[in-house]
Image (cartoon, rainbow, N blue to C red; front, side, top):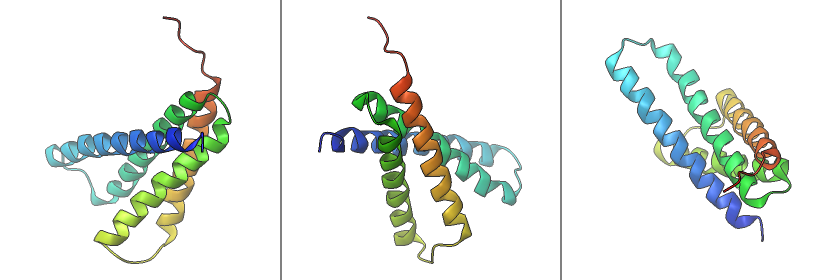
Amino acid sequence: MKYLKPILVGTAVGAVAITVVLMVLSLLLSLQNIPQMLITPMVLVALGVGAFLGGNFAAKLTREKGLLVGLCCGALLFLALWLFGQAIHGGGFGAIGIVKLAVALGLSALGGVMGVNAKKRRK
């Protein structure tokens, strides 16, 4: 239970980061002539940034078990995004879903490890 609040906060931070990155990328798409085939990699970049920041933030709050906290944060973030996607589009869980899950878990775990090992700032 002591890890639940940091994981939820980290997931929220990750969701906000994904939203901001997607907004910037959508602005870029509207201003530039970007090929349709680059949209999926752009979504993966947004997911990776959000997962990394969410796992990092959650691990900095707990100051221990960064890998586990990061993985939980990434799994929760992926689950939330997947459920929203299912509600909007429907469909199944294909190859791109596996890639998104791998990106979310891998980068959130990396963020968690880096968050725990980051030096605490002096005030």
